[in-house]
Amino acid sequence: MPKKVFNKGIRLSLTVFTLLVASTINAVADVQPTPTIFGDVTIGKDFSPDPFTVRGMSGGSVPGSQVAKRSETATGPCTGFVDETPDHTLELTSKFDYLKLRVDSPKDTTLIVKGPGGTWCNDEFDNQNPGIVGEWLPGTYQIWVGSYDQGQYFPYTLQITEVK
Image (cartoon, rainbow, N blue to C red; front, side, top):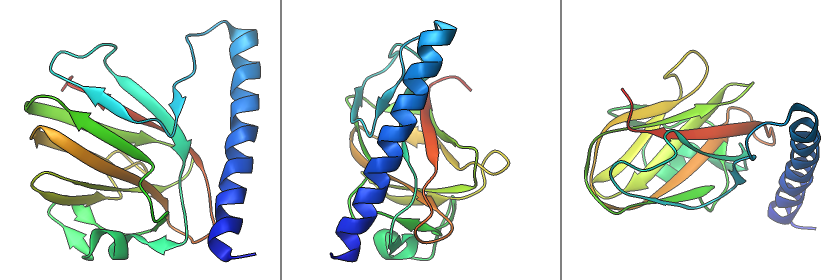
C-alpha cells in the first residue's frame, strides 16, 4: 500500500474517532453544534458567527517548506509536515483590513497559508499554537495545518475572526 494512502487512512481513522468522541461530548454537554471537519469557508466583511471555526487533523508526510516553496516568511518559519493538498480553502469575498486565523490544538502545530499576495507560515503565535494576523485581500486561500513530526496527527480547531 502506498505511504500516501496509508497516511490518509490514519488521518481518516483519527478524524472518525474524534467525531465520535466530540458527538458524545456534545450529546452530554448540550453545547453548540460541532464545527465542520476539513471544511471550506466563504466569508465577507462582518461575517457571523465570529469567530467562525472549522476542525481537522494536523500533519502529513510533506515538509512544510516544500509546500510553501521556502523555509521562512515574514510571519514565521515554514516548518512541520503537512498533506500535499490543503486542509481548508478560505474564500474571502471582500478585503479585510484586519483578519486573524488561529489554530487551537492540544499539541504544537504549524500553519501555512497560500493566497493572493503570497505565502505565509507560522509556528508560534499564541504559546504552542500558530496564527496569522493582518490585512487580507479578496480571493481564495489554501490552508495547511501541520505537525512537527512526520506521521503525527493531532485534532485542531481553526478560528477565523475580525475581532482584535
